[in-house]
Amino acid sequence: MPDSAARESIEGCDSRRREDISQMKPGLVVLLGSGETSSIGGQAFESVVRQLPAAPRIAVLETPAGFELNSAVVAGRVADFLSQRLQNYRPELSVIPARKRNTQFSPDSPELIRPLLKANLIFMGPGSPSYAVRQLQNSLAWHSLIARHRLGAAVVLASAAVAAISAYALPVYEIYKVGDELGWRPGLDFFGAYGLPLVCIPHWNNAEGGATLDTSRCFMGQERFAQLVALLPREMTIVGIDEHTALVVDLSSMQCQVLGRGGVTVIKDGREQKHAAQENFPLAVLGEARHASREPSSGLPAAVWEQALAAQAEPAPPAAPPEVITLMEQRQISRDQRDWARADHLREQIAARGWIVVDTREGPHLEPAVGG
Image (tube, rainbow, N blue to C red; front, side):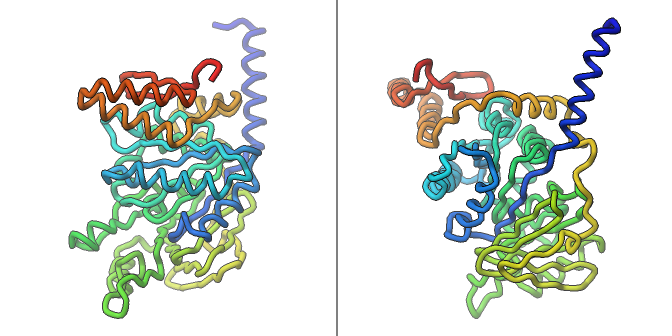
């Protein structure tokens, strides 16, 4: 057991840590109905980045689209857009290909999700809500995202990711494309920690079906969506976000703001409220929210919280640019196909850009070359 001096030292550190934590504020949350790479999405990102430290570290989490063969392209397109749109802010961008559990690109891989622990802004977007929930629920990636948000990182979500973080997630593909029975799936419940039982619906005013098919309410149509609402627990609040529209939620100031072309619809206790673009309204409209818990690590594995605290205290490591991550992925494909010559050539291309590939049991990761 530690002696009295050691105990005093430990207790002093714990006390200082509690004081530090008490001053922490959760980051902004932005929910985009669609258009993350449009001018409206750019405005939303910029409104967040203006409040972040200089040269913000941005992580693009690929998981919602991880089942798609071109998921790297989907995430890379967002990273390229942010690199161009936010160039005046000198962002450091990382694409995190956490696509599927029990693979080399797993959301449980410590090496793969390491950039999350240092990110000032985390983005998730298009794909499948139910797939995103399946891959992220209780994963290292999800716990790391929650920890970073509680320590101040902004979280920007679009399309499928908006639905996935609900208390109950809408299984869009399963109903709209496959014809499954109407119902909901347990979601990631991001806002549950703040006392807000929310069901978030992107693409609220979608009109892709034209005059012959109602695709509003995230492709469900109003008639079918009314049936879905009847299946939800009464305490749920529905938040519908129009196309090319963003809802900015500030859990510290307890305020919300609508940005973009459309509006936000809130259905609570059977009553519907509409909030137009540029409108501000209190978070209380969504429910009886509470400030972040006095124990911000609540619900998180102790190891993840400690890693998040430690990462925040460390100097920021350099982040590999998207083009280098793409080369690393191409190299891994070549290795899987035993095309050693091409794999070596790709390694040389990576090295020429100042990076080294390190192969581990969890998969390859990148480190900056010494003197690179």
